[in-house]
Image (cartoon, rainbow, N blue to C red; front, side, top):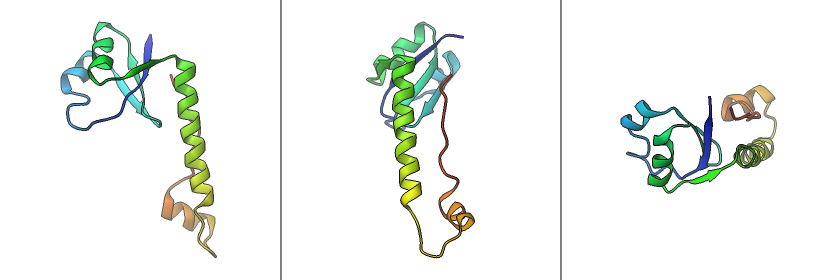
Amino acid sequence: MAFKYCTATNTGKGFITHKDSSRFSISGYPGDVWVLSYNHYTLEWINRVNGTQKTKEEAQTIVDTQITNYQSAWDGNNVEGETEQQKIDRLGARPTEIVLP
């Protein structure tokens, strides 16, 4: 399956409509990266939401950078005397690498 990659800021209601979901698949990733199955409706959506097309490599770099930022924030968010499990309970698991399709 062919994919299109873009960045776009989720503006809330109407950003992805039911009609959009019925025309193509769409998945969001850290860094406001969106991966869409490619068909003639995909470019219409990217234009409608003021998205910026990216190559897969560009999109992956954005996601990687955001995950690294999340990991750094997680690593630095410590409470004295807290065990690792308590930290996980408080913050959730440490963010892990994401590979775009």
